[in-house]
Image (cartoon, rainbow, N blue to C red):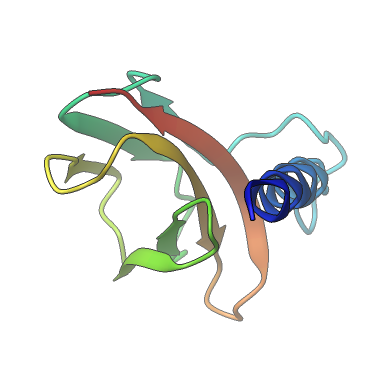
Length: 113
C-alpha cells in the first residue's frame, strides 16, 4: 500500500510540474507567474498573492497528496491567506483556473507541524 501512495505522489508531482510549465494564453514568456506564495514550508498560515490583470477572475483550489480537494475559492482577492491549523503535515498542490476553467498555474507547498 505504501508503494501505491508513493507512486501516486510521484505522479501528482510530475503532473503539477508539467502544468506549471505551460505558457499562459497570449504570453510568449513561459516564466510569467500569476501567483507568489510564502512561507514555504508553512506551519500555521500561508499567503498567496495573485497577479490579476483587468477583470480577470480566478478560482483557486488546493488538493492533498491523495488528490482530494481540501479548499476551493472563487473570485479570489489579490492577497489571500489560508489558515493551516486543520491541515495535517504533508505536501499540497494548488491550481489557479481562469473564468473558462483552464488551469493557468499550479504548484505545491509543504505544511510542517
